Image (cartoon, rainbow, N blue to C red; front, side, top):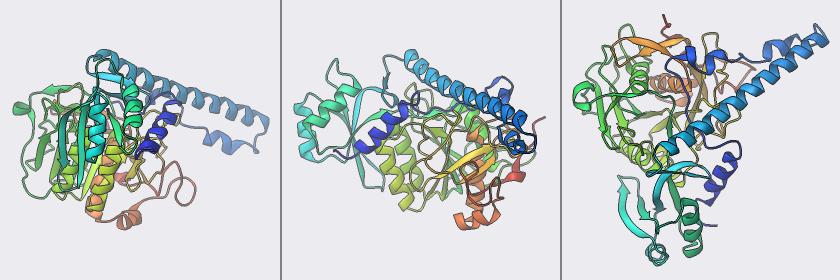
Length: 429
């Protein structure tokens, strides 16, 4: 079995649960799935035994509602992914693991014999790059005419069984926030030294809560370009004044992997951004993006963590029926879920192969690109709170000491090791 095949097999299994993971957080929850869904069945189950069969019937009905909600979330995710591909059929293609860039396959650390075999099988080399300081090389191969990505993977596996190949999978933003302004006109700029916190997302727009300590770099066509999603996340990480973040006034480094590019959020862009963060010695990087397991991203994550950069990532917002979210599910990544104003786990929260912390993800405000503040909801918005506090704490052990235990005593599958930054919520008006 060629290297990376295990991750591909995981992706195939994930798709059996209705497709690769997508985001789904809402900037305005009034019309989103989360605001209309039940808060869980635990209170009803607690009454069973005290009030007999009526409570049991009620618990069953509540469980059915939660199960239906989970199915709707998973079906909605699959629909969004299909719509994305249909919107850009010349650029994107659906694979068994979700959307990927059409017409190209990535070879990871290929030796000369692997590349020779690929060329003899009809592929051509279109790009060859090293990820700065990580000792990882990727070679982008163009497909023979008429070959699908899945067919290309099978042909390469046969032609070069010792090779490590992957499609260039798309990672989805946790939300539908629009790109709203030109980089030259609307982006906060600054920095240049060693940042305190990094975020990998879209571009960040100018906002009163964000001072001069925001530096940005683009990793996609048209980037950096301001987006509502990234601007909200930046304010939750480092905002000051009325929109106070978890680490107010800290220096922020932003990597925009979306820009105005229909291929935005692809595995190559995410890998380049992670390598960039490690090269700048950023101690903590927040990633509110989700996608399928990808061998290139997995290898880059491993190297970045070994360099001492912590990665904090969201479990996504597609509900418990969704496949495990990546990069949150990679070993060593700090996986984060969200809670509402009553410290209940968000019903739309996805899942990862492990869970570390919960943080506020609803009933709160964040910066808007218009200059005001607006209500947000989703696990995306829990990530900058944990990243900010981890940056201040300096270690996971120190952060653990501040986490508030929720649910059953000790670590659990709904809240991880506890609630971080519970007091950080700026109430939505």
